[in-house]
Length: 337
Length: 255
Image 1 (spheres, chains in turn cyan, red):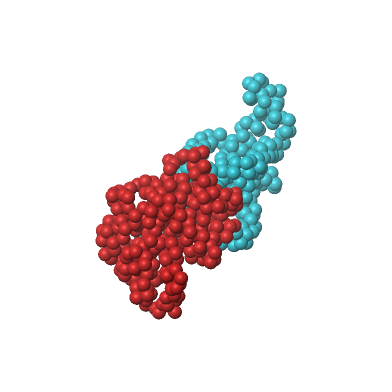
Image 2 (cartoon, rainbow over the protein chains, first blue to last red):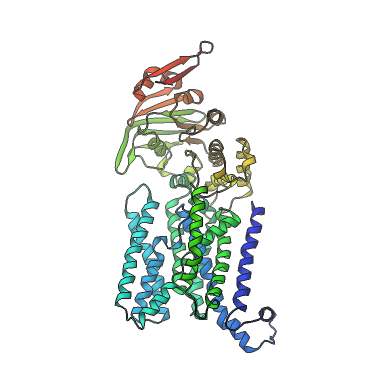
Protein backbone atom coordinates (compact mmCIF):
# COMPACT_ATOMS: atom_id res chain seq x y z
CA UNK A 1 0.00 0.00 0.00
CA UNK A 2 2.61 2.52 1.06
CA UNK A 3 4.92 1.46 -1.72
CA UNK A 4 2.50 2.40 -4.48
CA UNK A 5 1.86 5.85 -2.97
CA UNK A 6 5.48 7.01 -3.13
CA UNK A 7 5.51 8.02 -6.83
CA UNK A 8 2.25 9.94 -6.33
CA UNK A 9 3.69 11.91 -3.42
CA UNK A 10 6.87 12.53 -5.43
CA UNK A 11 4.82 14.05 -8.26
CA UNK A 12 2.81 16.21 -5.84
CA UNK A 13 6.03 17.45 -4.21
CA UNK A 14 7.57 18.10 -7.63
CA UNK A 15 4.57 20.29 -8.53
CA UNK A 16 5.03 22.23 -5.29
CA UNK A 17 8.78 22.69 -5.82
CA UNK A 18 8.24 23.71 -9.45
CA UNK A 19 5.60 26.16 -8.26
CA UNK A 20 7.99 27.65 -5.70
CA UNK A 21 10.84 28.10 -8.20
CA UNK A 22 8.52 29.48 -10.85
CA UNK A 23 6.87 31.88 -8.39
CA UNK A 24 10.13 33.32 -7.01
CA UNK A 25 11.85 33.78 -10.37
CA UNK A 26 9.09 34.92 -12.73
CA UNK A 27 7.50 38.35 -12.68
CA UNK A 28 7.98 42.02 -13.52
CA UNK A 29 11.31 41.89 -11.75
CA UNK A 30 12.91 38.59 -12.89
CA UNK A 31 15.12 36.90 -10.32
CA UNK A 32 17.68 34.34 -11.46
CA UNK A 33 17.36 30.81 -10.16
CA UNK A 34 20.88 31.05 -8.73
CA UNK A 35 19.94 34.17 -6.77
CA UNK A 36 17.00 32.34 -5.18
CA UNK A 37 19.33 29.48 -4.27
CA UNK A 38 21.89 31.87 -2.83
CA UNK A 39 19.22 33.64 -0.82
CA UNK A 40 17.98 30.36 0.68
CA UNK A 41 21.52 29.17 1.47
CA UNK A 42 22.54 32.46 3.07
CA UNK A 43 19.40 32.52 5.20
CA UNK A 44 19.85 28.92 6.32
CA UNK A 45 23.53 29.32 7.14
CA UNK A 46 23.15 32.78 8.67
CA UNK A 47 25.87 34.30 6.47
CA UNK A 48 25.37 37.64 4.77
CA UNK A 49 24.54 37.22 1.08
CA UNK A 50 26.15 39.14 -1.76
CA UNK A 51 22.76 39.76 -3.40
CA UNK A 52 21.64 43.30 -4.25
CA UNK A 53 19.14 44.57 -1.65
CA UNK A 54 16.48 44.91 -4.37
CA UNK A 55 16.60 41.18 -5.08
CA UNK A 56 16.36 40.36 -1.38
CA UNK A 57 13.41 42.73 -1.11
CA UNK A 58 11.57 41.10 -3.96
CA UNK A 59 12.12 37.62 -2.57
CA UNK A 60 11.40 38.44 1.05
CA UNK A 61 8.73 41.13 1.07
CA UNK A 62 7.06 41.13 -2.34
CA UNK A 63 6.94 37.54 -3.49
CA UNK A 64 7.49 35.76 -0.17
CA UNK A 65 4.16 36.59 1.55
CA UNK A 66 2.24 36.04 -1.65
CA UNK A 67 3.88 32.65 -2.23
CA UNK A 68 3.15 31.52 1.32
CA UNK A 69 -0.44 32.73 1.04
CA UNK A 70 -0.95 30.92 -2.28
CA UNK A 71 0.41 27.66 -0.87
CA UNK A 72 -1.72 27.94 2.28
CA UNK A 73 -4.91 28.86 0.43
CA UNK A 74 -4.40 26.16 -2.19
CA UNK A 75 -3.68 23.53 0.43
CA UNK A 76 -6.63 24.65 2.55
CA UNK A 77 -9.13 24.55 -0.32
CA UNK A 78 -7.84 21.17 -1.46
CA UNK A 79 -8.01 19.63 2.01
CA UNK A 80 -11.49 21.04 2.64
CA UNK A 81 -12.69 19.81 -0.74
CA UNK A 82 -11.28 16.35 -0.10
CA UNK A 83 -12.96 16.18 3.30
CA UNK A 84 -16.33 17.36 1.97
CA UNK A 85 -16.19 14.92 -0.96
CA UNK A 86 -15.72 12.10 1.55
CA UNK A 87 -18.32 13.40 3.98
CA UNK A 88 -20.96 13.80 1.28
CA UNK A 89 -19.89 10.63 -0.52
CA UNK A 90 -19.83 12.53 -3.72
CA UNK A 91 -16.77 13.23 -5.85
CA UNK A 92 -18.39 16.32 -7.42
CA UNK A 93 -18.62 18.32 -4.20
CA UNK A 94 -16.51 21.43 -3.49
CA UNK A 95 -15.68 23.24 -0.21
CA UNK A 96 -18.39 25.86 -0.68
CA UNK A 97 -21.18 23.24 -0.71
CA UNK A 98 -22.44 24.32 2.72
CA UNK A 99 -22.35 28.04 1.97
CA UNK A 100 -18.92 28.98 3.38
CA UNK A 101 -18.00 30.99 0.28
CA UNK A 102 -21.33 32.75 -0.08
CA UNK A 103 -21.32 33.62 3.62
CA UNK A 104 -17.78 34.96 3.37
CA UNK A 105 -18.72 36.90 0.22
CA UNK A 106 -21.62 38.59 1.98
CA UNK A 107 -19.40 39.42 4.95
CA UNK A 108 -16.74 40.92 2.69
CA UNK A 109 -19.07 43.06 0.56
CA UNK A 110 -20.71 44.38 3.74
CA UNK A 111 -17.23 45.23 5.02
CA UNK A 112 -16.43 47.06 1.78
CA UNK A 113 -19.82 48.80 1.81
CA UNK A 114 -19.15 50.22 5.26
CA UNK A 115 -15.62 51.16 4.15
CA UNK A 116 -13.97 49.07 6.85
CA UNK A 117 -10.24 48.50 6.69
CA UNK A 118 -8.72 45.38 5.20
CA UNK A 119 -8.81 43.58 8.55
CA UNK A 120 -12.44 44.50 9.07
CA UNK A 121 -13.30 43.14 5.64
CA UNK A 122 -11.34 39.94 6.21
CA UNK A 123 -12.78 39.50 9.69
CA UNK A 124 -16.34 39.92 8.44
CA UNK A 125 -15.67 37.49 5.58
CA UNK A 126 -14.29 34.91 8.00
CA UNK A 127 -17.21 35.28 10.41
CA UNK A 128 -19.68 35.27 7.49
CA UNK A 129 -18.34 31.94 6.26
CA UNK A 130 -18.50 30.31 9.69
CA UNK A 131 -21.95 31.74 10.43
CA UNK A 132 -23.37 30.60 7.09
CA UNK A 133 -22.25 27.01 7.61
CA UNK A 134 -23.41 27.02 11.24
CA UNK A 135 -26.84 28.23 10.09
CA UNK A 136 -26.97 25.56 7.38
CA UNK A 137 -26.01 22.91 9.91
CA UNK A 138 -28.58 23.98 12.50
CA UNK A 139 -31.39 24.21 9.94
CA UNK A 140 -30.38 20.96 8.27
CA UNK A 141 -30.24 19.08 11.59
CA UNK A 142 -33.61 20.41 12.66
CA UNK A 143 -35.26 18.82 9.63
CA UNK A 144 -36.17 15.22 10.48
CA UNK A 145 -35.07 12.98 7.67
CA UNK A 146 -33.71 9.54 7.02
CA UNK A 147 -31.06 11.07 4.79
CA UNK A 148 -29.42 13.82 6.89
CA UNK A 149 -26.63 14.28 4.35
CA UNK A 150 -29.02 15.10 1.52
CA UNK A 151 -30.95 17.55 3.70
CA UNK A 152 -27.67 19.24 4.64
CA UNK A 153 -26.63 19.66 0.99
CA UNK A 154 -30.03 21.02 -0.03
CA UNK A 155 -30.05 23.42 2.92
CA UNK A 156 -26.60 24.56 1.83
CA UNK A 157 -27.87 25.26 -1.68
CA UNK A 158 -30.91 27.17 -0.40
CA UNK A 159 -29.01 29.26 2.16
CA UNK A 160 -26.26 29.88 -0.43
CA UNK A 161 -28.86 31.28 -2.82
CA UNK A 162 -30.23 33.57 -0.12
CA UNK A 163 -26.73 34.83 0.72
CA UNK A 164 -26.11 35.35 -3.00
CA UNK A 165 -29.18 37.58 -3.08
CA UNK A 166 -27.72 39.48 -0.14
CA UNK A 167 -24.47 40.01 -2.03
CA UNK A 168 -26.47 41.24 -5.01
CA UNK A 169 -28.36 43.69 -2.84
CA UNK A 170 -25.22 45.15 -1.27
CA UNK A 171 -23.59 45.49 -4.70
CA UNK A 172 -26.73 47.23 -5.98
CA UNK A 173 -26.63 49.71 -3.09
CA UNK A 174 -22.86 50.26 -3.29
CA UNK A 175 -21.16 53.33 -4.69
CA UNK A 176 -20.53 52.30 -8.32
CA UNK A 177 -17.25 54.23 -8.57
CA UNK A 178 -15.44 53.42 -5.36
CA UNK A 179 -17.00 50.37 -3.77
CA UNK A 180 -18.36 48.29 -6.62
CA UNK A 181 -14.98 47.68 -8.33
CA UNK A 182 -13.49 46.66 -4.97
CA UNK A 183 -16.35 44.23 -4.40
CA UNK A 184 -16.09 42.77 -7.87
CA UNK A 185 -12.35 42.38 -7.58
CA UNK A 186 -12.69 40.71 -4.17
CA UNK A 187 -15.38 38.33 -5.40
CA UNK A 188 -13.16 37.21 -8.27
CA UNK A 189 -10.35 36.27 -5.94
CA UNK A 190 -6.81 37.62 -5.79
CA UNK A 191 -3.65 37.39 -3.75
CA UNK A 192 -2.13 40.60 -5.14
CA UNK A 193 -2.68 42.58 -1.94
CA UNK A 194 -1.17 39.97 0.38
CA UNK A 195 1.00 41.59 3.05
CA UNK A 196 3.14 39.80 5.63
CA UNK A 197 0.59 40.76 8.31
CA UNK A 198 -2.10 38.79 6.43
CA UNK A 199 -0.30 35.53 6.94
CA UNK A 200 -0.99 35.11 10.65
CA UNK A 201 -4.82 35.22 10.48
CA UNK A 202 -4.56 32.89 7.48
CA UNK A 203 -2.05 30.45 8.91
CA UNK A 204 -3.73 29.89 12.30
CA UNK A 205 -7.13 28.63 11.15
CA UNK A 206 -5.71 26.80 8.11
CA UNK A 207 -3.16 24.94 10.22
CA UNK A 208 -5.67 24.11 12.94
CA UNK A 209 -8.40 22.88 10.58
CA UNK A 210 -6.02 20.95 8.34
CA UNK A 211 -4.38 19.23 11.31
CA UNK A 212 -7.76 18.14 12.65
CA UNK A 213 -8.75 16.73 9.25
CA UNK A 214 -5.42 15.00 8.74
CA UNK A 215 -5.59 13.55 12.28
CA UNK A 216 -9.01 12.13 11.42
CA UNK A 217 -7.81 10.74 8.08
CA UNK A 218 -8.25 7.05 8.96
CA UNK A 219 -11.79 7.64 10.16
CA UNK A 220 -12.57 9.67 7.03
CA UNK A 221 -12.47 6.42 5.05
CA UNK A 222 -15.29 5.04 7.17
CA UNK A 223 -17.14 8.38 7.04
CA UNK A 224 -17.35 8.02 3.27
CA UNK A 225 -19.48 4.88 3.65
CA UNK A 226 -23.28 5.01 3.90
CA UNK A 227 -24.38 6.35 7.29
CA UNK A 228 -25.67 3.09 8.79
CA UNK A 229 -22.67 1.13 7.61
CA UNK A 230 -20.30 3.62 9.21
CA UNK A 231 -22.20 3.42 12.49
CA UNK A 232 -22.29 -0.37 12.46
CA UNK A 233 -18.51 -0.30 12.06
CA UNK A 234 -18.29 1.60 15.32
CA UNK A 235 -18.05 5.21 14.19
CA UNK A 236 -20.11 7.84 16.01
CA UNK A 237 -20.98 9.61 12.77
CA UNK A 238 -22.91 12.52 14.29
CA UNK A 239 -20.12 14.12 16.38
CA UNK A 240 -17.50 13.29 13.77
CA UNK A 241 -19.52 14.97 11.02
CA UNK A 242 -19.69 18.14 13.11
CA UNK A 243 -15.91 18.00 13.65
CA UNK A 244 -15.20 17.54 9.93
CA UNK A 245 -17.61 20.27 8.87
CA UNK A 246 -16.19 22.67 11.48
CA UNK A 247 -12.58 22.00 10.49
CA UNK A 248 -13.25 22.23 6.76
CA UNK A 249 -15.27 25.41 7.24
CA UNK A 250 -12.52 26.97 9.33
CA UNK A 251 -9.91 26.50 6.60
CA UNK A 252 -12.30 27.51 3.81
CA UNK A 253 -13.44 30.69 5.58
CA UNK A 254 -9.87 31.73 6.40
CA UNK A 255 -8.82 31.18 2.76
CA UNK A 256 -11.77 33.05 1.32
CA UNK A 257 -11.24 35.90 3.79
CA UNK A 258 -7.64 36.32 2.58
CA UNK A 259 -7.92 35.57 -1.10
CA UNK A 260 -11.54 36.14 -2.02
CA UNK A 261 -13.54 33.54 -3.86
CA UNK A 262 -11.41 31.07 -5.74
CA UNK A 263 -13.55 28.30 -7.09
CA UNK A 264 -12.59 24.96 -8.59
CA UNK A 265 -9.39 24.34 -6.64
CA UNK A 266 -11.27 22.40 -3.97
CA UNK A 267 -12.99 20.34 -6.65
CA UNK A 268 -10.18 19.72 -9.10
CA UNK A 269 -7.22 19.10 -6.78
CA UNK A 270 -8.80 16.25 -4.76
CA UNK A 271 -9.35 14.42 -8.05
CA UNK A 272 -5.82 14.97 -9.25
CA UNK A 273 -4.55 13.80 -5.86
CA UNK A 274 -6.83 10.75 -5.98
CA UNK A 275 -5.41 9.79 -9.34
CA UNK A 276 -1.90 10.08 -7.86
CA UNK A 277 -2.25 8.21 -4.54
CA UNK A 278 -5.68 6.54 -4.63
CA UNK A 279 -8.83 7.22 -2.61
CA UNK A 280 -7.54 6.22 0.85
CA UNK A 281 -7.90 9.41 2.91
CA UNK A 282 -4.85 8.50 4.97
CA UNK A 283 -2.74 9.31 1.92
CA UNK A 284 -5.19 11.46 0.00
CA UNK A 285 -5.46 14.30 2.51
CA UNK A 286 -1.70 14.98 2.79
CA UNK A 287 -1.25 14.53 -0.97
CA UNK A 288 -4.12 16.93 -1.70
CA UNK A 289 -2.60 19.52 0.66
CA UNK A 290 0.79 19.39 -1.09
CA UNK A 291 -0.69 19.33 -4.59
CA UNK A 292 -3.21 22.06 -3.78
CA UNK A 293 -0.44 24.36 -2.56
CA UNK A 294 1.60 23.80 -5.70
CA UNK A 295 -1.40 24.09 -8.00
CA UNK A 296 -2.61 27.43 -6.70
CA UNK A 297 0.95 28.75 -6.61
CA UNK A 298 1.37 27.95 -10.30
CA UNK A 299 -1.97 29.53 -11.12
CA UNK A 300 -1.20 32.63 -9.06
CA UNK A 301 2.14 33.06 -10.80
CA UNK A 302 0.34 32.76 -14.12
CA UNK A 303 -2.24 35.29 -12.90
CA UNK A 304 0.38 37.96 -12.19
CA UNK A 305 2.72 37.30 -15.10
CA UNK A 306 0.63 36.17 -18.08
CA UNK A 307 -0.74 39.60 -18.95
CA UNK A 308 0.01 43.26 -18.32
CA UNK A 309 -2.68 43.37 -15.67
CA UNK A 310 -3.41 40.85 -12.95
CA UNK A 311 -5.86 38.20 -14.05
CA UNK A 312 -8.32 37.45 -11.22
CA UNK A 313 -7.64 34.00 -9.79
CA UNK A 314 -11.27 32.97 -9.86
CA UNK A 315 -11.31 33.50 -13.62
CA UNK A 316 -8.15 31.48 -14.23
CA UNK A 317 -9.23 28.59 -12.02
CA UNK A 318 -12.60 28.53 -13.80
CA UNK A 319 -10.99 28.55 -17.26
CA UNK A 320 -8.90 25.56 -16.21
CA UNK A 321 -11.53 23.97 -14.01
CA UNK A 322 -14.52 23.95 -16.34
CA UNK A 323 -13.08 21.69 -19.04
CA UNK A 324 -11.67 19.51 -16.27
CA UNK A 325 -15.09 19.24 -14.67
CA UNK A 326 -16.72 18.22 -17.94
CA UNK A 327 -14.06 15.56 -18.42
CA UNK A 328 -14.70 14.48 -14.85
CA UNK A 329 -18.44 14.13 -15.38
CA UNK A 330 -17.79 11.97 -18.40
CA UNK A 331 -15.34 9.72 -16.57
CA UNK A 332 -17.30 9.60 -13.29
CA UNK A 333 -20.32 8.17 -15.06
CA UNK A 334 -18.09 5.29 -16.07
CA UNK A 335 -16.28 4.49 -12.86
CA UNK A 336 -18.44 5.64 -9.95
CA UNK A 337 -21.94 4.56 -10.89
CA UNK B 1 -24.71 -14.98 25.43
CA UNK B 2 -27.54 -13.98 23.15
CA UNK B 3 -29.10 -11.16 21.19
CA UNK B 4 -32.71 -10.74 22.10
CA UNK B 5 -35.55 -8.37 21.28
CA UNK B 6 -38.55 -8.47 23.60
CA UNK B 7 -42.00 -7.05 22.87
CA UNK B 8 -40.51 -4.85 20.17
CA UNK B 9 -42.41 -2.18 18.34
CA UNK B 10 -40.28 -1.17 15.37
CA UNK B 11 -40.40 1.69 12.92
CA UNK B 12 -39.29 5.21 12.11
CA UNK B 13 -40.23 8.51 13.73
CA UNK B 14 -43.13 8.98 11.32
CA UNK B 15 -44.15 5.37 10.76
CA UNK B 16 -44.83 2.24 12.81
CA UNK B 17 -43.69 -0.87 10.93
CA UNK B 18 -44.24 -3.74 13.36
CA UNK B 19 -45.45 -4.48 16.89
CA UNK B 20 -45.15 -7.12 19.57
CA UNK B 21 -42.13 -8.88 18.10
CA UNK B 22 -40.06 -11.31 20.15
CA UNK B 23 -36.88 -12.51 18.54
CA UNK B 24 -33.80 -14.23 19.98
CA UNK B 25 -30.49 -15.35 18.55
CA UNK B 26 -28.01 -17.62 20.35
CA UNK B 27 -24.32 -17.86 19.63
CA UNK B 28 -23.46 -20.70 17.29
CA UNK B 29 -26.90 -20.55 15.74
CA UNK B 30 -28.15 -19.37 12.34
CA UNK B 31 -31.51 -17.62 12.18
CA UNK B 32 -33.14 -16.85 8.84
CA UNK B 33 -35.58 -13.95 8.56
CA UNK B 34 -38.14 -14.39 5.79
CA UNK B 35 -41.10 -12.39 4.60
CA UNK B 36 -42.55 -10.41 1.72
CA UNK B 37 -41.19 -7.02 0.69
CA UNK B 38 -42.33 -4.20 2.96
CA UNK B 39 -43.06 -6.64 5.78
CA UNK B 40 -40.50 -5.12 8.13
CA UNK B 41 -37.46 -7.39 7.67
CA UNK B 42 -34.95 -4.59 7.18
CA UNK B 43 -36.49 -2.47 9.95
CA UNK B 44 -36.26 -5.39 12.38
CA UNK B 45 -32.67 -5.99 11.29
CA UNK B 46 -31.69 -2.37 11.92
CA UNK B 47 -33.45 -2.38 15.29
CA UNK B 48 -31.57 -5.50 16.38
CA UNK B 49 -28.34 -3.85 15.20
CA UNK B 50 -29.07 -0.78 17.30
CA UNK B 51 -29.08 1.44 14.20
CA UNK B 52 -32.64 2.55 14.98
CA UNK B 53 -34.14 2.54 18.45
CA UNK B 54 -37.19 0.39 19.14
CA UNK B 55 -40.41 2.37 19.57
CA UNK B 56 -41.35 0.05 22.44
CA UNK B 57 -39.77 -2.93 24.14
CA UNK B 58 -36.02 -3.43 24.27
CA UNK B 59 -33.16 -5.20 22.55
CA UNK B 60 -30.73 -6.90 24.92
CA UNK B 61 -27.29 -8.07 23.98
CA UNK B 62 -25.33 -10.18 26.45
CA UNK B 63 -27.87 -9.24 29.11
CA UNK B 64 -27.41 -5.50 28.63
CA UNK B 65 -29.73 -3.05 26.91
CA UNK B 66 -28.38 -2.36 23.42
CA UNK B 67 -29.16 1.33 23.87
CA UNK B 68 -26.64 1.49 26.72
CA UNK B 69 -23.75 0.42 24.51
CA UNK B 70 -21.56 3.04 22.87
CA UNK B 71 -21.35 2.85 19.09
CA UNK B 72 -17.86 1.41 19.46
CA UNK B 73 -18.75 -1.22 22.05
CA UNK B 74 -21.66 -2.31 19.89
CA UNK B 75 -19.47 -2.72 16.83
CA UNK B 76 -17.20 -5.11 18.72
CA UNK B 77 -20.14 -7.44 19.40
CA UNK B 78 -22.47 -6.91 16.45
CA UNK B 79 -21.34 -6.81 12.83
CA UNK B 80 -23.51 -5.81 9.89
CA UNK B 81 -23.10 -7.05 6.35
CA UNK B 82 -25.14 -4.75 4.12
CA UNK B 83 -26.31 -5.72 0.67
CA UNK B 84 -23.31 -5.55 -1.59
CA UNK B 85 -23.19 -2.19 -3.30
CA UNK B 86 -20.87 -0.14 -5.43
CA UNK B 87 -18.85 2.27 -3.31
CA UNK B 88 -18.35 5.95 -4.13
CA UNK B 89 -14.58 5.72 -3.90
CA UNK B 90 -12.39 2.99 -5.31
CA UNK B 91 -10.82 1.82 -2.03
CA UNK B 92 -8.68 -1.29 -2.27
CA UNK B 93 -10.16 -4.51 -0.94
CA UNK B 94 -7.62 -4.46 1.88
CA UNK B 95 -8.61 -0.92 2.87
CA UNK B 96 -12.28 -1.94 2.97
CA UNK B 97 -11.55 -4.92 5.25
CA UNK B 98 -9.31 -2.72 7.39
CA UNK B 99 -12.32 -0.47 8.03
CA UNK B 100 -13.71 -3.40 10.02
CA UNK B 101 -11.07 -2.57 12.63
CA UNK B 102 -12.51 0.91 13.29
CA UNK B 103 -14.07 -0.06 16.63
CA UNK B 104 -10.77 -1.48 17.89
CA UNK B 105 -8.93 1.82 17.49
CA UNK B 106 -9.47 5.31 18.83
CA UNK B 107 -10.61 8.35 16.89
CA UNK B 108 -7.14 9.37 15.76
CA UNK B 109 -5.35 6.02 15.71
CA UNK B 110 -3.87 4.52 12.59
CA UNK B 111 -4.34 0.78 11.93
CA UNK B 112 -1.83 -1.22 13.99
CA UNK B 113 0.22 -4.17 12.79
CA UNK B 114 -2.30 -6.37 14.61
CA UNK B 115 -5.19 -4.70 12.73
CA UNK B 116 -3.48 -5.39 9.43
CA UNK B 117 -2.78 -8.98 10.44
CA UNK B 118 -6.46 -9.51 11.32
CA UNK B 119 -7.53 -7.99 7.98
CA UNK B 120 -5.17 -10.26 6.05
CA UNK B 121 -6.31 -13.30 8.05
CA UNK B 122 -9.94 -12.54 7.17
CA UNK B 123 -9.09 -12.12 3.50
CA UNK B 124 -7.43 -15.53 3.64
CA UNK B 125 -10.35 -17.08 5.49
CA UNK B 126 -12.63 -16.19 2.58
CA UNK B 127 -10.08 -17.07 -0.07
CA UNK B 128 -9.81 -13.52 -1.42
CA UNK B 129 -6.30 -12.59 -0.31
CA UNK B 130 -5.28 -12.32 -3.97
CA UNK B 131 -7.74 -9.41 -4.35
CA UNK B 132 -6.17 -7.34 -1.53
CA UNK B 133 -4.71 -4.66 -3.82
CA UNK B 134 -7.65 -4.56 -6.26
CA UNK B 135 -10.13 -1.67 -6.13
CA UNK B 136 -13.37 -2.73 -4.42
CA UNK B 137 -15.26 -1.19 -7.33
CA UNK B 138 -13.61 -3.45 -9.89
CA UNK B 139 -14.41 -6.90 -8.47
CA UNK B 140 -17.49 -9.08 -9.05
CA UNK B 141 -20.66 -9.01 -6.95
CA UNK B 142 -19.82 -12.37 -5.36
CA UNK B 143 -16.34 -11.16 -4.44
CA UNK B 144 -17.77 -7.95 -3.00
CA UNK B 145 -20.08 -9.97 -0.75
CA UNK B 146 -17.08 -11.94 0.51
CA UNK B 147 -15.16 -8.70 1.12
CA UNK B 148 -18.05 -7.35 3.21
CA UNK B 149 -18.11 -10.64 5.15
CA UNK B 150 -14.37 -10.37 5.75
CA UNK B 151 -14.85 -6.78 6.93
CA UNK B 152 -17.59 -7.89 9.35
CA UNK B 153 -15.40 -10.64 10.80
CA UNK B 154 -12.49 -8.21 11.13
CA UNK B 155 -14.67 -6.52 13.77
CA UNK B 156 -14.23 -9.76 15.77
CA UNK B 157 -17.93 -9.76 16.63
CA UNK B 158 -20.09 -12.30 18.48
CA UNK B 159 -23.05 -11.82 16.17
CA UNK B 160 -23.17 -11.23 12.42
CA UNK B 161 -26.26 -9.77 10.77
CA UNK B 162 -26.56 -10.02 6.98
CA UNK B 163 -29.09 -8.20 4.82
CA UNK B 164 -29.99 -10.40 1.83
CA UNK B 165 -26.49 -11.82 1.45
CA UNK B 166 -27.46 -13.82 -1.63
CA UNK B 167 -29.32 -11.09 -3.51
CA UNK B 168 -27.84 -10.40 -6.94
CA UNK B 169 -25.38 -13.29 -6.71
CA UNK B 170 -25.10 -16.04 -9.29
CA UNK B 171 -26.08 -19.58 -8.37
CA UNK B 172 -22.56 -20.73 -7.53
CA UNK B 173 -21.82 -17.72 -5.34
CA UNK B 174 -25.15 -18.15 -3.51
CA UNK B 175 -23.95 -21.61 -2.47
CA UNK B 176 -20.58 -20.24 -1.39
CA UNK B 177 -22.19 -17.59 0.79
CA UNK B 178 -24.54 -20.19 2.34
CA UNK B 179 -21.52 -22.32 3.21
CA UNK B 180 -19.75 -19.33 4.75
CA UNK B 181 -22.81 -18.65 6.89
CA UNK B 182 -22.70 -22.24 8.18
CA UNK B 183 -19.00 -21.85 8.83
CA UNK B 184 -19.66 -18.68 10.87
CA UNK B 185 -22.01 -20.60 13.17
CA UNK B 186 -19.46 -23.41 13.43
CA UNK B 187 -16.87 -20.90 14.62
CA UNK B 188 -19.26 -19.83 17.39
CA UNK B 189 -20.91 -16.75 15.88
CA UNK B 190 -24.60 -16.09 16.11
CA UNK B 191 -25.82 -15.35 12.57
CA UNK B 192 -28.99 -13.61 11.43
CA UNK B 193 -29.73 -13.19 7.74
CA UNK B 194 -32.66 -12.13 5.62
CA UNK B 195 -33.52 -13.87 2.39
CA UNK B 196 -36.25 -14.08 -0.21
CA UNK B 197 -35.53 -17.74 -0.87
CA UNK B 198 -36.82 -20.32 1.64
CA UNK B 199 -34.36 -22.81 0.16
CA UNK B 200 -31.46 -20.65 1.33
CA UNK B 201 -32.94 -20.76 4.82
CA UNK B 202 -33.30 -24.53 4.56
CA UNK B 203 -29.70 -24.78 3.41
CA UNK B 204 -28.04 -22.58 6.01
CA UNK B 205 -30.32 -21.84 8.96
CA UNK B 206 -31.14 -23.66 12.21
CA UNK B 207 -34.21 -21.58 12.86
CA UNK B 208 -36.50 -19.36 10.84
CA UNK B 209 -38.50 -16.28 11.70
CA UNK B 210 -41.38 -15.41 9.38
CA UNK B 211 -42.47 -11.77 9.29
CA UNK B 212 -45.46 -10.36 7.46
CA UNK B 213 -46.95 -6.86 7.82
CA UNK B 214 -44.84 -6.29 10.91
CA UNK B 215 -46.25 -9.37 12.68
CA UNK B 216 -44.54 -12.66 13.43
CA UNK B 217 -46.19 -15.48 11.46
CA UNK B 218 -43.99 -18.26 12.83
CA UNK B 219 -40.72 -18.65 14.74
CA UNK B 220 -38.93 -21.90 15.53
CA UNK B 221 -36.72 -24.71 14.26
CA UNK B 222 -36.33 -24.58 10.50
CA UNK B 223 -38.07 -27.91 9.83
CA UNK B 224 -41.21 -27.08 11.74
CA UNK B 225 -41.48 -23.46 10.53
CA UNK B 226 -40.82 -23.82 6.81
CA UNK B 227 -43.93 -25.77 5.96
CA UNK B 228 -46.15 -25.51 2.92
CA UNK B 229 -48.93 -23.93 4.99
CA UNK B 230 -46.69 -21.36 6.66
CA UNK B 231 -45.03 -20.30 3.40
CA UNK B 232 -48.37 -20.04 1.59
CA UNK B 233 -49.68 -17.88 4.43
CA UNK B 234 -46.48 -15.81 4.53
CA UNK B 235 -46.37 -14.90 0.86
CA UNK B 236 -50.13 -15.27 0.13
CA UNK B 237 -49.11 -17.16 -2.98
CA UNK B 238 -49.10 -20.80 -4.03
CA UNK B 239 -45.95 -22.76 -3.17
CA UNK B 240 -44.95 -26.27 -4.25
CA UNK B 241 -42.86 -28.61 -2.12
CA UNK B 242 -40.39 -31.17 -3.44
CA UNK B 243 -38.94 -33.94 -1.30
CA UNK B 244 -35.86 -35.97 -2.09
CA UNK B 245 -37.05 -39.56 -1.56
CA UNK B 246 -33.52 -40.73 -0.72
CA UNK B 247 -32.60 -38.19 1.95
CA UNK B 248 -35.89 -36.60 2.88
CA UNK B 249 -34.44 -33.16 2.13
CA UNK B 250 -36.99 -30.60 1.05
CA UNK B 251 -37.12 -27.73 -1.40
CA UNK B 252 -39.79 -25.22 -2.30
CA UNK B 253 -40.79 -23.84 -5.69
CA UNK B 254 -42.82 -20.65 -6.13
CA UNK B 255 -46.01 -20.69 -8.22
